[in-house]
Image 1 (cartoon, rainbow, N blue to C red):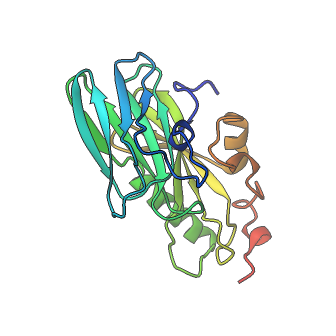
Image 2: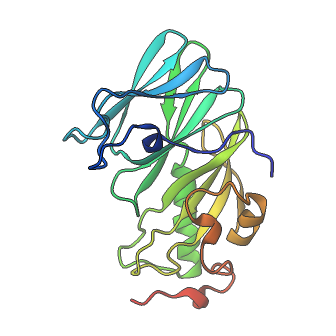
Length: 225
């Protein structure tokens, strides 16, 4: 499928690295939109401060808007082709979980930050429950990754069972088309279909997710609990 967006840009890959792998002080990273009029700006030392809140900035023309998030692990940006919005995802824990997705949109004058994934998460948890699939922690929240934009009003989101051996079918996922900015689910796609649709555009290692039949034959992927 042809997406209305470019590839995910890794914010950390843009920072100069020191030998100890920390970001170099004095460096500022900018992730510009396709038209160059908007950008996300990550200040010097971003992610190094001992804080529960990590702030970066959306710059719209000459206005600068602070964006506060609660994590900094593996931040990535996906811009819509028309520069009207970006999907930003990151983990507030570690490299395994828990990944969140924010929609950063602009109407030309203001910047809005919303979470368009709540309905996707609720549907994915309910879907797993219906199949009788469980985690040791009931209803463990899934990783929520953006795949990209369909157009300026719709996006694709992947919901993945976290890679814990205490979860049935860990590492498996389902994809969703959602309305923006409401997050209303338009359509859901099982793992095998999503791999064919989004070949080369799936985030992280979802293209190699195990057991494409996990929701057709749930007994095939029980955990080792």
